[in-house]
Length: 347
Image 1 (spheres, rainbow, N blue to C red):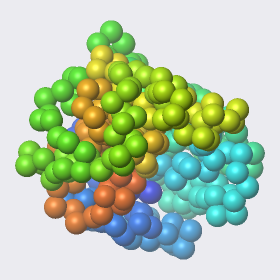
Image 2: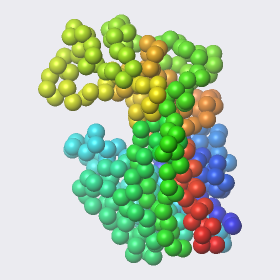
Image 3: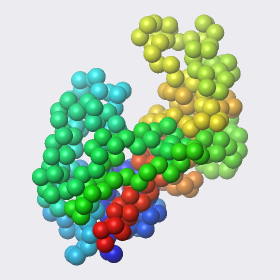
C-alpha cells in the first residue's frame, strides 16, 4: 500500500520520526522555525520546508504528494495558546495562534487527504473560547471524514513513555471509523530510573564526555543550597524559611507547588516543557544528583534517540524549546500504529 505523509508544524520531528519508525514514508515537514531544520533533516529522509502555513497556498501542499498514493496529513498546531498556563492571559500574539487550527482546516478542505491526525493539549477541547476546535471538527465532518472520539485524551504513561504527559489526539479518515489503539503499558509504566538511570553522573554547569547534550545548567549559590535540602518528590515547600523565595510566601505563590522540585526515581517524569532544564521552573531536579536534568535527559523523556540532537548546532535555549515543544516519538509511533490498524481493516 503506497502512503505518503506531510507533517504540518513539524518542529524537530518527533511525530515524523515516530511515523517513520512505523514504516510510513514522510515526504515533508513544514514549520516556521528555521532552527528546527538541522535536527529534522539529520534524522529524516523528508525535506524540511521553512514556511508559515498561514502564507502557504494549499496547492503547494497538494503538489507535495505523488499521484495515486494515499495522502496522510498530520500536525500539532503550537499549543501554548490552549495551555492551562496561558489560557487566562490576554495576549494578541497568543490569540492569533488559535487561528492556526483554522488554517489546518482550510488546508484539509483544499487538499482532501484520506487520513488526518491532529495532536494537541487536552485544554483545547475544554477551553476553546473561540470555537476553533469545534469548527475544525465541523470542517472534517462536512468534508466526509469519519472522526474519532473528539475528546480522546492520551495518557502517555500508558503507552510506554516515561513522562506524565496527557495529549488530545484526534484521528479522521475518509475510509471509515478510526480510533487510537488501546493502551500498551497499563501495568508496566516506564519510570525516571528506567529512562535515565544508565546515564553517568554529571555536576551542574559541566558537560559530560558521554554526550555533548548531557550538560546541566549551572546553579546559583542559593539554588545549590536549596537543592541540597530537597529530597525525591519534594519541592520548595520543604525548604527552611530563609531559602524560600518571597513570591512563594505569598498566597498566590503557594499554588506553584512543583517548582524547585526533584523527580522520583520510581515514577514517570513530569511533563517536559520549553523550560524543562531549569531547576526553578518545575519538578525538574534530578532525583539524586544536585542539579536540574540535562538536555539529554529531557530528550530521553520525550523518547528521542540519544544522538538525535547531536551536531544540530543550536543553543541550549533553542534546544530545550525544541525538546519541550516536540511530540514524543513514541506517541508518534502510537499514532502510526493506529493508522496502520485502520488501513489493514479497510484494505
